[in-house]
Amino acid sequence: MKPEYKRILFQVIFTLIALEIVLRIFGVLSTFTEKLGQGYVSYYNKTLPSWYHTWPINKPIVYNEPEINCSYPANSFGLREREIPVAKSDSTKKRLFFIGDSFTEGVGVEYPNAMPRWFEKKLDSAGLNVEVFNAGVSGSDPLYEYMLLRDKLLPLHPDMVIMSINGTDIQDCIYRGGMERFNADGTTVYRKGPWWEPAYHYSRLCRLFIHYILRYNNILTRGEVANAETQQARWQIQQCLYETQRFCRDHNIQFVCALHPMQSTYRKKNKPEDIKALSAQLSTDSVQFIDMYPDFEPVITSDNWQQYFLKLNGHFNATGYHLFADLLFDDINKRYPGFFK
Image 1 (cartoon, one colour):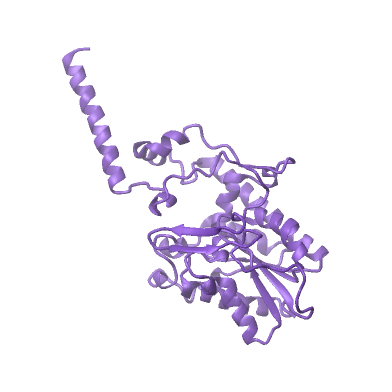
Image 2 (cartoon, rainbow, N blue to C red):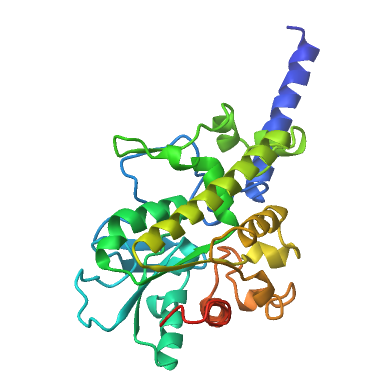
């Protein structure tokens, strides 16, 4: 190789390495988990030993992030909840189970400040004889929640079930697929990711190329494929909610699903198109469904959202969870009177 070619090659390599270092130092194109100090996490290509997305039984749930540094116990069902006896101690007291993801579990706050706990206080204030259990699990989605309800929670005699959903559920179904993820052998298998994801994992320059040249989105899909996968995920959620409601009806359980906003709605100052489409699908279906976006709009704005959400983590703070519970309680009473009777 001629000396000038060697010099040019060296300069190119040096420039690329320097650019990679600069991108890493300034956190350019960091993923959500990297921003939280957890490193890169792939949501594709997973095989899990169970159909149920819960925490390890009777083990502490630990969060060690810039905004959250806490630990709380999981019960014998792998839930952030006190122990739940199978038999009711008071036959006249009804049982309400909340199912959902981290926004239901209450990531970011202590146990008394999770949304289901605020909701329980609303029920008590209204003189309603209802016992509330939090079966939300961080990282869950409607399909996991249906399996949890069907196989684990039904023996606990729920009288009412409220499922909360949000925009992450669409992404989760893109990563994980629909009911086909649950294998007959009891394992759960997620979809395969793009072949180049390992390079994306380790190189910020690769991410720069993937996003700005090839135009892939944050879940590593693009164009018509991305649109088709999003539409398929919405359909899977819709079918799951329909099946969940049918299951509840067959077992004399009241059911309602609530779609709530996330921090990104107010930071980006718009309601995402995929959420609009999901809301439209569910609003015209026979599922008992509440779109909570209009309820939050008069309260949370692009100017005051930091009063209700954690800045980095994106979850509600105690004030936000309290608001969530208040709006949901009022919504259910207004749209489905007698739900708690």
